[in-house]
Image 1 (cartoon, rainbow, N blue to C red):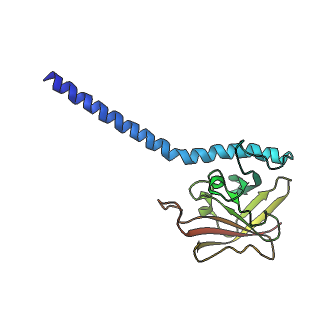
Image 2: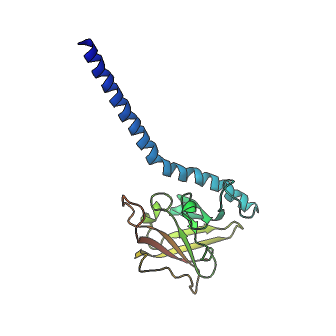
Image 3: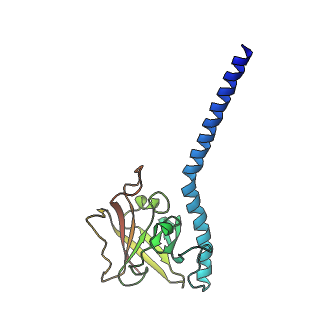
Length: 196
């Protein structure tokens, strides 16, 4: 009788231990992407300071194939992100990326910057027409943009115009924001015109 009781308690202890381990694993897995994004932004801020000091294309970490090209401020300075060169999935995992086929912020044409909807560009859903976006370049120049419209596009049918007659900006992320699945063809686009 005692042996049966001990076996039952032992089995319960194993089940509870397994459930706790599974719970901690799920918690850690869910926190991995946001934690990686936060650490990457800290390293990119250090690279940004080096760029401001004149270092050409400073890598945020030794094996990086990207570098800071601008600093984006939004929502009155509550949002501050380092924008990286390139649009590869590897780059976007660490921060918003400037599409190499487009001009840099402040130049003639449309500057296109992409980011993930569940990390760096989650704030796009809170923006409104008329709000401002500020870009600071490594050489100290600042460019202020005013949001002119918000749109949802199907990437299979629409495209972003790169050749514009005045400096423009397009911030792009996947849509919808609360979708449980990543990817898909829909894109949320914030379009802004440069003020100065």
